[in-house]
Length: 335
Image (spheres, rainbow, N blue to C red):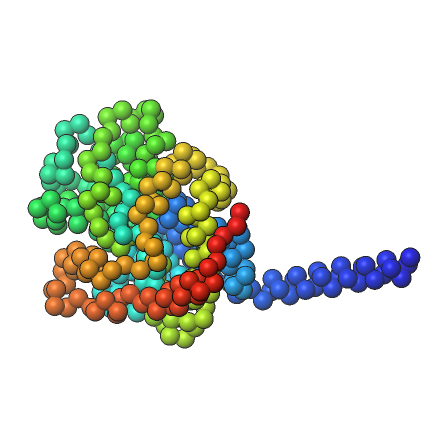
């Protein structure tokens, strides 16, 4: 019996050492996100379900808007960022970054106001619009909406309110700005709250704006020197995307665990808004990208002839490799 006990102890010790060694072998990487909403769900899912660990990765999620995320990406202090929209502007100004994944082909945004005298975009002349950070998808969507309405790009100004949904929710309820861009699901918890009774939607951007919406950016250097890492990241992320699309309730539960203070009604509404907008393969068409680049060029005062080539901004090569693997394997997620 003593020999058996010693053998069992030895086995337990060996397993513990193996587990520690396996954990030590995980490569630590960082990803910045702008908000803990459905757009970030694939990453939290991939952590929760062990998809990153399967790829030998340990992902740390950092909450940061594009104004912080892009300098961090350029410096190499983070490997990946959800601030793909802000990265495009930085690339057009010379930053050696690339967009490697595009989540959706239109933004699940709405433009709201609590000012009764404001009844349309035209009434916002010279007014401030609340966004997350300058040059983000909120601002680009607004610029496209203005252009399509026949209004000049300087019709409104922009107030960055920082990462996350809460600052824009608070600003909308308080009426501190004439207009706020926010997700439909993020409005749901505000219904019936004090200060929201005057609120009304001006524009449902999901119905009128088409653009590459959110995604992943990384450095051109990382793609060139460690493409394997980029593909491992994408492999885990795509598993998260597929899980998200397959399991609504489970996805919302994982997001709620990532942010215990969030209202689940907001998560559910946000999920419902996002799913119909998502690309099938994470790749935006050249026509859609071109439209986006023209809006950005106007914002950055870059002549159309000076806009970089699409493949100098977007590099879907690693994603195409990973997509081909999934097509061949037929992998599907399990609860």
